[in-house]
Image (cartoon, rainbow, N blue to C red; front, side, top):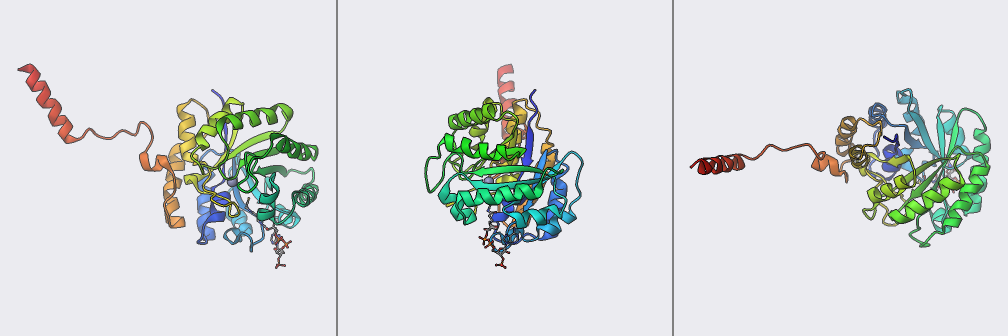
Length: 318
Ligand code: COA
Ligand code: ZN
């Protein structure tokens, strides 16, 4: 059955949004746990301005403290050259650059026009160069923007094209605020795949309107094999009104496993890690599987049902 690549974003997309600062040692312990879960990639943290994202101001210490596992790529979010230089000093495998395809969202998230962002990111790409560190670009709001509304597919393809020309390895199509719907996802994923077959393509859904699992099915039908998701369904964009969590990793893997996809993920370990989250962040998470258990986690038949069945059998025997 088809191999899929799962990419964990909880410690970046999730933690950037938490009100209380999560202790550096707790972050490191969690990432070490996640490194044993079978992920293709873990987005560890971001090298952003500590004023903009105070929750991740310990990026260097986290990168220095984690125990890296072979086969897992460690990526970080990088907004500018300053961030790239900091990240390169930490021996990252990949830099994940970010800009929005919507002008108002880019201005509120990054305080720049899209053209300014593009210029800055091309500088970042030049700094990283053609060395061992790969570059991925996450394009926000590709399926709709909470301020602008619809985002045209041609607009998205145009930005992918500009970054592809710069030689990036991969592009992530982000549904930053859960505006995507399955048929739209299928159509756009197909267009990007057909036009840029050499690009490593990732889909990144938020479950803001409950459509993230359905959108994943849309992407699978278009041949997508790489997905971001977050432990416990943490996540959100601090600059997008009403944004909520990423698609929950354990809910997604549970569904994909049942459908026969090879995710490479050890769901028991993921669930154990997810169960520790409320202790770290001080609140419950939206994880469904943590609450309900897996589909075949059976419950004992209640005593009164057993008594009832005995009575029925006795009555039938006369
Ligand atoms: N790392 C550390 N510090 C940084 C930095 C970086 N990558 N980039 C900028 N700074 C510092 C500057 O040194 C400056 O510090 P000072 O006030 O002490 O002099 C301050 O941040 C402002 O710098 P400036 O260049 O004016 O940037 P800005 O305030 O316009 O911020 C971003 C631009 C993009 C760096 C900032 O808004 C940011 O990091 N945003 C995070 C976006 C994000 O991650 N969103 C969620 C993910 S989608
Ligand atoms: Zn996101």
